[in-house]
Image (cartoon, rainbow, N blue to C red; front, side, top):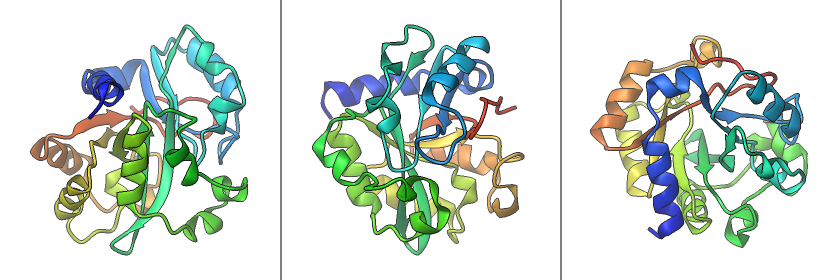
Length: 219
C-alpha cells in the first residue's frame, strides 16, 4: 500500500454513522452515467445542504472529474470515485473506487468506452469485468475498493461472499445506505448484517445515498 492508498484509507476510516447521516455522502451519480444532474449541479446542491464531503461515483467512468473543474471546489471536499459493474460467482456486483487517480492508465482500461456502458442497465449487464481486476486497478490508481450496497446481492452467504472478496483485496463495505428507498424490491440481507460483516473482517465502512438526482439523506 503506497502513501496515496494509505491517505484515502485513513480518511474513509475516520467517517462514521453520524457523518453519513449528516454531511458526508460518498455515493451519487451525475449525468455522466445514469444520474440526472450535472456534476456542477450536484456540487451546488451539496453546498446548499452544507455537506462537508461528497463523492460522485458514476458507473464505469470518471468523466465527471475529467470534463469539469469540480475538483477545484473548496467546499465541500470532493473525493474522486467510480462505481464499477462486474461479475463474481454469478452475481452482478458494484465495486466503488475512492481516491483514485482519474488519469491512471490501468483504471482507464476498465472504464466504459461509450455512454451506453455507463447509463444502460442492459448494456452494463453485458460487462466482463472481474473483481480481482477491478480491485487491482483501483489500488494501482491509489484508491480504496469498497463493495457497494451489499444487502442487494443474492449470494447464498453474504459473509462468505465478502470474505472471498476481501481475499482479492477488498478494502471496505458500504454499510450506511438507504435500503428502504433504493432497490427495496431486491434487498436480500439486513443492513445490520452488513455492519456485522464489516466489523468481522475489519473493513472500512462507508455510506452514501446513491442519489440519481438531488442529494437525498440516507435517513
